[in-house]
Length: 500
Image (cartoon, rainbow, N blue to C red; front, top):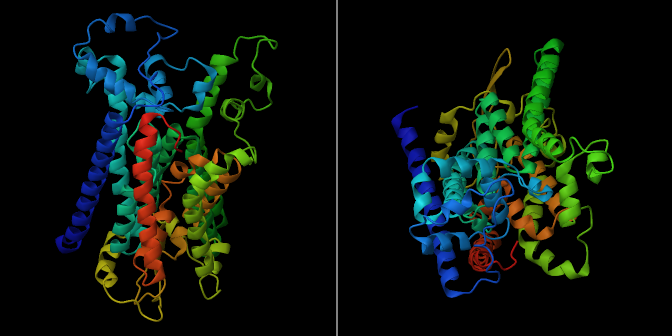
């Protein structure tokens, strides 16, 4: 690619990095401000009981050089952060701790024993663990923002719209969790990175990233859906384009193996929990879930300790939590409905039909081995032109060689939002499933952070921002909503008050 084409994209990427860093510094500053001005609701966060398995901590407490700073850092360990730090410090001690997957604690341990190890004698072991958690998550968020932009450029085919969507992601309403000791940043990085490598053709790398996302959050296994979508289109092409049934069988087998690889880390962790809690005990001593035909520890913990289940949260006293989650759920529903209404043929046919209703015997863009980098850069010049009354798509140039597909789309003019294409089908289905799960099954107030890594939310919001009239006003309302939740979240969450 020529330097003239690469330079604008690098310039935009640099802006995204600066915006992501600025947003993290802003969040950390707000946390410090609110912690200074307001007394926390719960002051027990600095308490550090001994681990069940060792008393080594007793020695460390006597050599701390700056205990005041260490105590301040430990005071910021609130809500789920308590679990992650405790797991990094002592391992999985209790049954309920197995609800928190091991990737973040493992990263915290790694950084605390390497980069931050010299600080243990200065501020204490637990404070260093917390500091490592902050470092991991804030760096991960900056990288996630970069991958978000890269994915958006390819899917939207409009670098300017991709840039606006990425800025919205940098200042998303769940920002407080991306700068705290939570799994949102790692999950976003691994999910968006995996999606980027998938649509760029590096499938095995994508599988690795998706599998790691399942080590960060349980919903990371849903990323296998992207592989299923890809496999479905590849098998279709093998049968109807290449007339090679054996190739379709090969594609299906390889796709199934890749999906299994994504599930393996989560399943392995459940097996680890079963071995630690159930193995070696008699039936009378076993926990109830150990006796199940499929002993799934994670679902039992969610149901037994946190009351998670279908419609179990539909109670009148939970109405404030439904109101708290209503903005993000409304945005999710509007994002899905807008795409479905704009391109029903593509959506309901899962990308196998063109807007005119004709069958499209081509692979889905998500099944590409490689998306030409020049395509998105060439479209940057077109993005500055005014929207035309009608858009046409030139003849699709396709080159098929074995299991490799290279497609090149050229757009003359665009009236409809550029993201309205087959690319977004699996992303929209993913968002739809997550929103339904958050509303009907989970504690609804976590919807804000649960859905915050879904790209279609920001693509739709960026579309509103570039739309004239009412659409732009709705776009500004989304910015207002994000700003309000950043301020509210940094105030309430950091001081141990309920938020989401």
